[in-house]
Amino acid sequence: MARFCPWTNPSPQTIHSGRTYDAQNRLRLLLKAKCADKDGDQEVDMKRLILALAFMLVFPIASHATIFAQLALGGGYEAVLLISNKTNSAWTGTVWVMRGYNQEWEGQWAVNGQNFSGMSGVPVALPPKGMVKLRLTGDSTTRAGYLEVSADAGSRDVGVAISYFYEVRVKGVLQDTTGSPASAYGRRFFFAVERSSAIDTGIAWCPSPPYISNLFPMNLTLYDQNGAVARQRSYMFMGHEAQFISQLFTDLPSSFAGHLEIDSQDYIYLEVLRMETNPSGFQLTSTPADNFAP
Image 1 (cartoon, rainbow, N blue to C red):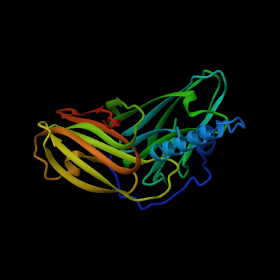
Image 2 (image 1 turned 135 degrees about the vertical axis):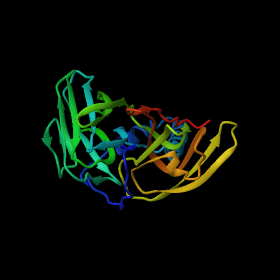
Image 3 (image 1 turned 180 degrees about the vertical axis):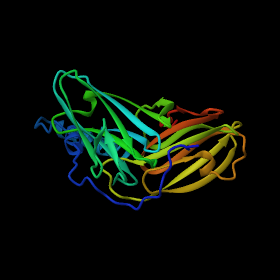
């Protein structure tokens, strides 16, 4: 039986070198000051500048691209995107399909039956209030990675609404389908986990733009239902990976319920899925992580 989207340990590599983000423009807006010549105004503006710089150190600017930290194609796995233009202007952007640390997708893949093998992204052009449905398929081998939807220059990432879901087919027959929201972004995450003979919790993480290859540690702390620390471990972030809680903690009891906290040295995207097996196959359910630290 197919498991939750297999993964591979990537070798760090940076591609899409031509991609740019509007962080500098947003920084200029954030740091904009009056700089007036009136008495006292310069002191106020300096305080605003210092405050803005301090804010930037705590909350660094990130691309507003929409990221889905888990994508599986091939071997019966398919993905569907519904992208709707909310604006009264034309919208253009790109759907990027990646693996590892911003590496090109391996194997054959197609969108709506058109072969995109060897390419990193699919251009999308929408008329005002328009919508497009994209079905992503692979070959006979299941491969995992992540997906990004970003706007081109002149369009805005927030100008579109995106629906994303997976489909799993066995011998061409639909076995399971589950929708997934955009992945949580941050350095600290909290989410419930469960493991039994029929249930496991799947976790996927991926890097965030602008994809500067950088390996860094993450601390994983697993709590039981009483709030006691059940397991702890460090894990080196090397790009996209997807694993079950039973794989991250191999000595976990066969029956366990609690919650996991992930503390990452750098910002990542994270997605959580619950898998429950049954006599006819399995069911996947999206259980988004909380990225708000109390």
